[in-house]
Amino acid sequence: MSYTVEDGQPQGDAYFFTNKIREILIAEIYAINGYTNHIENSNMEDLNVAWRSIMKDEKKHYGMLLNLLRKYDQVQYQQYNVHKNVKQGQLSSMQKYKPEYDKQVILNNLREDIKGEFEAVILYEQHLIQIHQQDIKNVLYSIITEEKGHAEHLTQILLKYDSDKYDSLVWNRLYFLKLSIKTVINFKSLFQNLFFRQTLNLLIVMLVYLTLISRYHQ
Image (cartoon, rainbow, N blue to C red):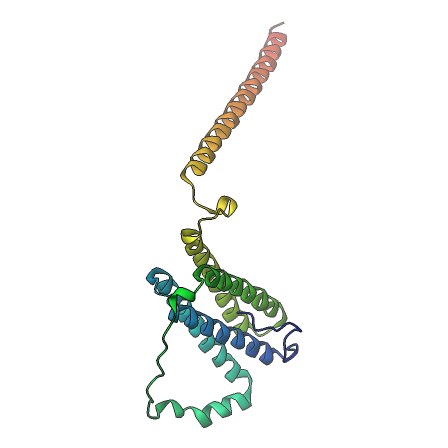
């Protein structure tokens, strides 16, 4: 979702909260284009299913954010009313695209998408603390949660196809078996220590009690 260039963001920093919404809209459009491109250039259906699902979320985010922008920017809303009937016009035939599957580096596309999701979270969380309108904050929080989910979803698909290890991210039966055994041993040791301390405390209490009883009878 990065739309920055080498020298920074070409349109400058967004100061008005409505322009912060536009900045997020640009990021969502960038993401939609990226996922569309990756789907059109992939014949791996499980990846395409994941990409379509995430792209559907990004389109939903775009709609949520554009509605907020129309609410707070009067001119934007006026222009919406001017152009809203355009979508009812006659449809032209869509241009067809012929992908070259053998030239695609699919895992790089996955990693690029994960990068984009993390970039989105950074941008949106920064705006979250700078925007004071509660309805916008609520929408942003919802979108941020989904973007974090997208990053985790894509990471799991990456681990499915990438033969290299990513430290403990790769699900390994032996690793988790060793971890489980170690955990059980630690708990057993803990309970043993607790039992020893409780027993010692009980013996001290009994000793004090017997001492008091002995003195009383004297």
